[in-house]
Image (cartoon, rainbow, N blue to C red):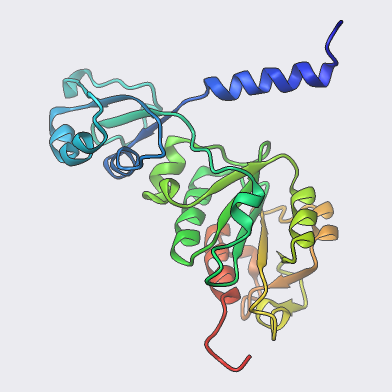
Length: 263
């Protein structure tokens, strides 16, 4: 009996995902990956100088590095990448599904960042850093039209990729609806919105909150705008469109956090 087309495509995607690897580069990104017990490491290429700087991390994870002469160091990454003499082939991290990350830790109201067509790995890397600093449960993109896990993203994240959950789910609107069903207030950032994050969350900072940010230029898609609970803007940012999306994510996340007040 012939398998349905959707079954065949799902099996093909599963095999493709299982075969995927990522090349991380740069001393900081490589060190943090080596120190992460949840990261599956496959191949480490280093110069002698880089090996000395990574000695503790190499010993910790037990990997045997390939030491390469700096003059012949040609790893399988973009030649323009600043690798600092260290590259590491790894499997992508598995952060589980939405339920695994959205429930929070029970200590404080959870916060999530959702990305609508944010494809620049440098922006996503910077967003991961902000999410880690301000205690977000996860950063969520989509399987298509979002930045995948890459060496450039990891380097910009400056170690946050190993600690801050980054999920890429099938459909952003479905994810928003699922979060709303879990009790989340879902706010979409839009420079033309009339209400600010602060006013939208007045008296409700103890609730779970998800903030949705769109790509620079086009912003949120129409479907996303229709699905979120409310469109909001960053306070005192009249020209929101001029803000870099990673900066906007940091400011918005901070503005959404619970405050020590009588609110």
